[in-house]
Image 1 (cartoon, rainbow, N blue to C red):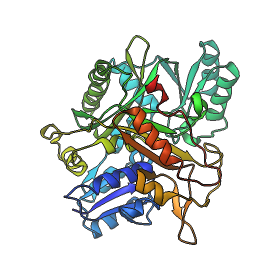
Image 2: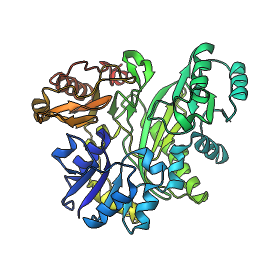
Image 3: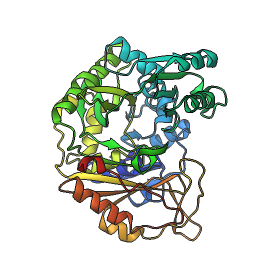
Image 4: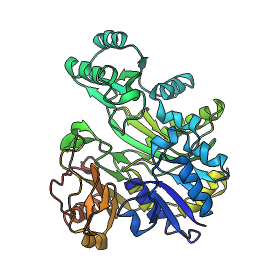
Length: 422
């Protein structure tokens, strides 16, 4: 069958690459795609919010499946629109995507069903939020309620930092309407862990655990980004803890969504914190594949991704086996100078051909330049993935390949996956 993937980042490149390996996949389209995705799919110049155009294109091309990558169109109800046009879509409907679209909704859901998470309060009034903040112990976590490209969360270690974050969100509206409500919650210390799972209602089929690195600089310093690198598996976190997280958080959340009349179908992504005593708690839920977690999880998938997508859409996820490789994967993100703040675009990239021969390179923010060469077009430019028998081998491969790529202002963390080797 022909497939349409919606999105244009590293996550969508990894999805297109994985789908292209399926014997059941014929033509793959990607809207809008990017310069790297163009190597495995036909890119279509339609934006992710042009729902009617996307529906018309999918019907014209008679695609058998639409796969929605990014969070924003999911929260805006793209699945509902496409399904109303008779299309088969992998991704949650609008009322289920709210688990990511509203942090207040997510926290209230977890609280109602006694699913482990940090203590919290939500506010729509800046004065009340500021007064509450002054009474709380530090560090403290302040979150914009709505979507903010992975940047709407501040872990404040000082009163000044906390007040500025709150003012930025609620008064200056740096995240627009996403900051009209905020969630203030207790700080959770420990090891971060991401568990992505294929879900079709109450059936949960977890993927291997991964760990993201959000802060822009080594040693987890600097402002949060959309993710500077990931790795999978997590040899330093016991399998029993991972299983406990699935049984006490991921599975109960899927059941809770069904109970609420919002059955979730797609990829449910749990961002977790493992406390020093080994207890997993929920930091966040996302309603789609994580970026850059997808870039280390899908290369470890031995089963047919298209088969899994179709099983989830048809409500028969419980009938299929999903196999994963024992190989380790490490992804190092190469970012533009200035990211996560303002950054230049159109900077020529060298070394892509050699890097592509040596390993996996997923394009996150690239475009074709006027001379036909590939140039930067985003903050996170490339995700360079190394595979190996263990984390150390995969990490060495990823950094060796990242070194083959150059562009002016290139920045990347040098300590991705280092925690797994301590």
